[in-house]
Length: 99
Image (cartoon, rainbow, N blue to C red; front, top):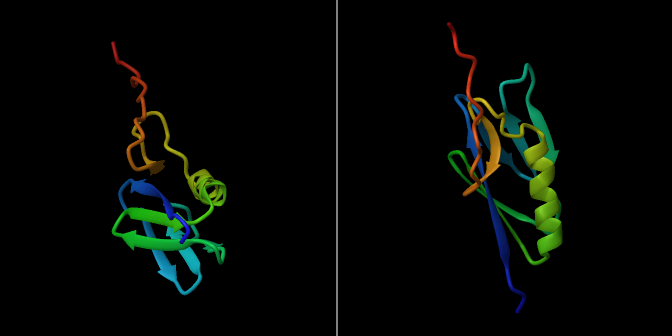
């Protein structure tokens, strides 16, 4: 029996959502349109509110798929909004200070 690997992605931001419809993922990431991405056959997707869990037998394919999803909206350095790995630590920059 093949070992299952998993990677979890987290949506961080107000109004950011993901919906699984048959073999497509539909993202609402604050753009003027929704983004659709087809799920490959060798990958299983589970969604819990703002958490996307990606499972499969080939770790390289899972990592590649998760990085493609993350590129849609990578975490920005000032507020940390975007798609990040579940336990990823984002170092936030300091904002502009007024005199």
